[in-house]
Amino acid sequence: MKITNVEAFWLRCPIPKEKQHFSDYGLLTDFDMTLVVITTESGLQGFGEAKAAVGSSGVCASIVSCVENELKPLLLGKDARHISRIWEHIYNGTRDHYSLSRGRKFPILGRRGLTISAMSGVDTALWDLKGKALGVPVVELLGGACRDKMEAYASGGWANADKIGEQLNGYIEKGFNGVKMRVGIMDKTVAESVKRVRAAREAIGEDIKLMTDAHGTFSVPEAKQFCRGVEDCNLYWFEEPISPDNRHGTAEVRASTSIPIAAGESEYTAFDVRDLIEVRALDVVQPDSAIIGGITESMRVAQLAHTYQLELAPHCWGSAFSFMAGVNVAFASPAAVVIEFSLGGNPMMYELVNEKITVENGMLSAPTAPGLGLTPNWDFVHEFKQKI
Image 1: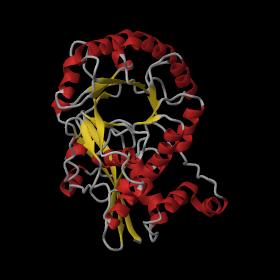
Image 2: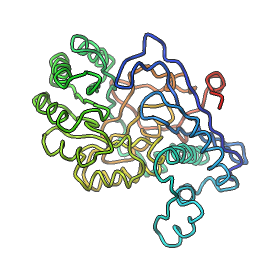
Image 3: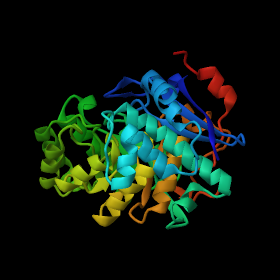
Image 4: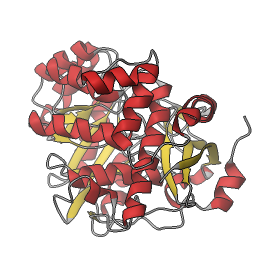
């Protein structure tokens, strides 16, 4: 299992006009991702995703450079089976021998940010490789599935107050029993966000899970005002109410409401999530395997969620590779009960891979294919690969 090559590809694919939407990020016209490919001496390949942005669009040139110029020299010749050792080697750099001998971290300066995103793609590709080599899905390597099926919720919801009910009911007609809608600065006022949520709840009824996501765009007073306005709407959670830079503010919002607060998709490593938990900012933890440090670090976060009796709900807005990374983590984790399923325009979920990802009657089945169970459509990769 010696590593002989490490590659990274920045892919940018246009979103069909009829599937584009406006949010606080503006009009989303393209979907970006970084595909990380690790090849061993036998020719076996593993695939992972690294992100330059939480949402759909982001310039990935820095991640490609980091993978190919900084991480690749560290990885060549390593045994791909030693996933934890490789994680420590990258995170601690030339002091990794101290880390492994002393049992604590001696991290490089880039212990947050795009270096960790690049690590995420590498780490996920290594788990994919190991699963393929052993002929088992990643979830088996993580301890096995805690359940046979898991509820998926439809993630979307950008329409105005007059149309939001129709949009969410369109998701429900596909079999979903949970839906998420966007709120926040895209609505211009808190009152408009409240109006849209109340319209949504009235349209979908009381039996459907309803989540809201502000993408971190409210101020603390605005988030509190929003919570007061929708307190009786039975929200399953309120996601990223304010900036991830203000964990104490998030804790303040949580203390002011009975609505569960979700966050974590913008965090790097389990240390950041630990800090959120310490200030009592969270009810639901949402690591993104393409950002937080890969499947390895997502599982460390899953253990924190389980220990502190918080719900785990991996952030799965990305390509098929980060989606399946989140799915494998969720199925292996006792703390996870629902999984995000993108209903936005997302060619990276469907056209990037040869396999078809499906939800039946609002439920996902536990993974059974080796590794992540995915193979790239190389024609798609070559067509949308960006020059750097």
